[in-house]
Length: 243
View 1 (cartoon, rainbow, N blue to C red):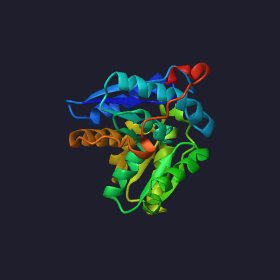
View 2: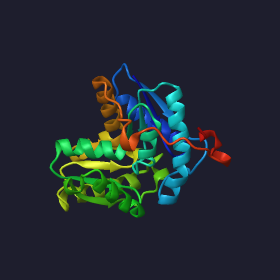
View 3: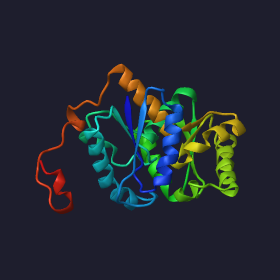
């Protein structure tokens, strides 16, 4: 199968890191197609960043459709434009936050989320509620590590991340940890060995869910919420969406 791995920010180095993690967890027969937008923020760390990035993300979804991919993964923990992408796409679209929460709920009674900046905490809390995992989550913690610092994470930043993971375990009662940023995907193995509890990376989780849906022959329902978008004219820079 072919999976389009979309990094909604414009950091190509981060896309490359995600692709390594995705390929490591994928079946040998699965092709991972990394995609990075040409326009938008270098990192997504607030609602404004997410709104700007969403338009470019949807252009990449359309690009993936033209490439006949079997699934799309939105590799940003805010799951930006997920509903819109599912309206646009024919193949399944998986957000890494939703994928990570689903996996964590299968292997632990309560899981913790450890993310980047404190200002992103409400986003994680909103998604936990939206996806119905709020009661399964022991808490959401922030490291205050900027997203771009994860591209070449130093020992000080890594220790901050590890400290918050330990606090989630010892103070909040987390039995597994969800890493709240796609840029943390390459840290899973190290953290797993040092903490001795399950560490869930949303990129890898999304890859396995995409493969499962493909093997089961399941696609997004096109009736109701995710039905085809309404035909209408678009003006200016979005004129290419006119139907």
